[in-house]
Length: 128
Image (cartoon, rainbow, N blue to C red; front, side, top):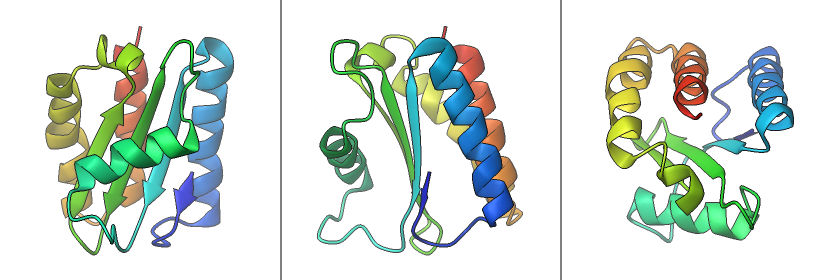
């Protein structure tokens, strides 16, 4: 959990980190949440998310089982990027549906924590 945009309270960060940590312990699958004010020098959030996930080593290399949730409240941009192993289960279509139906409606209400938490819970439910 990397809240560079200061979207969440400390309690919210702890709650999200606990959900992510418990899930990783059970499955070895890794989830990283990042909020940013800027994606400079990039202008494509998809490319930024993919390169950030690769540089940070999200997911086990042999399984490629990582997932990054990257968003910018100020830029109104959002992306879920998956490793190749994860992509077989959490396809772009599934991720887009979760973003459009679960996360963005909460974000539009200013409820960033519940949007991310509910999105993570749905991703975990689908990631079998």
